[in-house]
Length: 80
Image 1 (cartoon, rainbow, N blue to C red):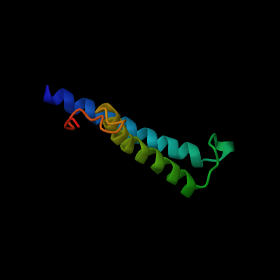
Image 2 (cartoon, one colour):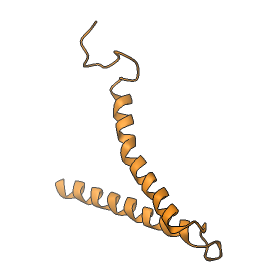
Image 3 (cartoon, rainbow, N blue to C red):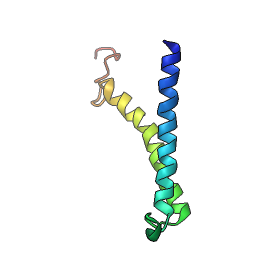
């Protein structure tokens, strides 16, 4: 079972980082080459912001998942 979990996580990471690389190439290749033609620095910044947003969205998901979206709405908070 542990080998299965490792394999699934490995392929998930491979596809995530692989698609980031493909997205970067697509963004900075010229339109004649089938891309968007953005500057390489801008394209890398956008891909980096996307990757950071993916990881930071887990914080928002955890916050919403615990019910802390309203003041004193956390299930672990003592009653007032």
